[in-house]
Length: 127
Image: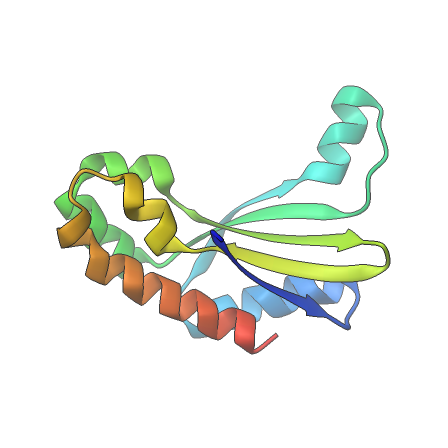
């Protein structure tokens, strides 16, 4: 599996705010927010349940990774999704170790990927 996932018993909008709060505690900022529901409605006129993709970045760790491999930017920022499915709110984060398995400098980046993954696990565990 390439994700760290939890199901929470809180409303969708509250879950988004809680994710942002917990990310900040681990040194992440949310750089992007893509409202998939709104985008699909606008572009395709289809209805889906709420779904957002947040791009989160831990600047010191991103900086260290970029020093090792410039192309790592293709895998940044780390995506976190919050969505509704059958009345439940689901939150998932990417596992950086899995994502970084395709990079050229795996050994040098393993420690950074591990640090990011632990921080994301901490976030998900507190939701």
